[in-house]
Amino acid sequence: MGASAQAERMFDPRCHFLLEAKVGRYHYNRGGFGMNFVVERELCKYLAWDIASVDFSAPWNCDLVNIGIKTGVKGFTPRFWENRMRVYANVAVGYDCGIITISKSKMSPIAERTGHGFAFSNGAGLQLGEHLFVGYALEYSTSVIDKGRFGIAHYAKLGWRF
Image (cartoon, rainbow, N blue to C red):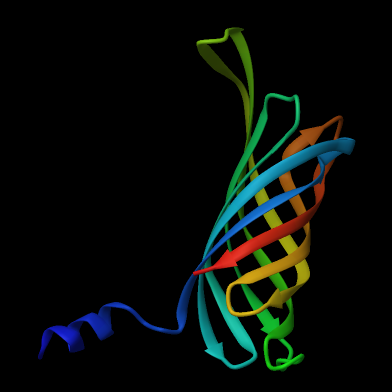
């Protein structure tokens, strides 16, 4: 087996990496931001599997950090507008960890409380060509509990598909 055949077996052209930046209303009416790193595999022309999505999110001016890992599916419409754009919708489930920290000094944050739980997200968006996409995401987490409520966040997303 030649070197090029080995390289083809190592990299599947149907697999893509996605990097997403998100900003919006975080849990309990706070503004928030986040980043997602996604490994996606196209199953067919209109369906993809998000093999793993590693998620980081946090509200502004708060000591809460959420880290999660999810898997899910994404459906696409046929391409339109000179065969460049397509609409997508996705759903994902997984695990989420919420960490609230307090700082006794700026150099040494101390973990005060950690919550673990179920994470769910869904959304829709528009792929604006081969790489750039914009969208909306609704995220639900049981790890962020405040006064008996679960965490729900709404985000606008901007992403790049490698």
